[in-house]
Image (cartoon, rainbow, N blue to C red; front, top):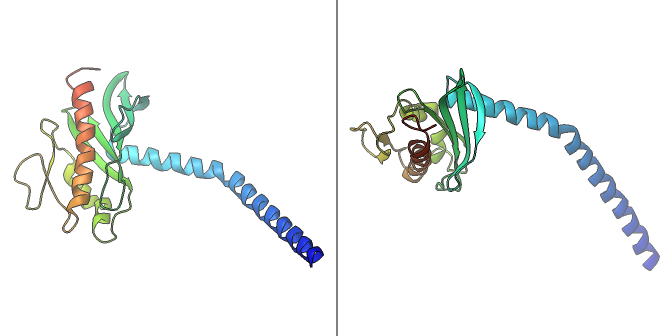
Length: 189
């Protein structure tokens, strides 16, 4: 019995070793392609949230909800900023990008990149029609969520039955707004 046990253990160890080797080889063979795809997707998202995208310079992220800050420059002058923020939604973290233009201190766009929200409800935060209401919003006042049609320039209409997700996205946008107003608005950079 002990010889049989040793034999089967050895066979199982060989099978496991070969399997691990194949998985490692597959990972090694695809990691560059995956990294390039991620970089291309990120660059495309930058252009969605800041259409007048110039040369990018990574700035230190202040922490909190803000995980990344990119400064866009044209002709050597900053023309906008892209913030990556991660507020908490109903199903977990919501990762989104927020574009802010130096021309008029306004939001140029948002894009939800990743979420764990409920399909058919909070997942509607990825729909371009809902995200479009952020475009052109002035940064003078923090944004607020409303369940009715917006009556003020700083209001965003909540997604029906997904108010928590709507508030999470607005919280993320407001974090970007606050950092921009504190550090970059009115010629501070």
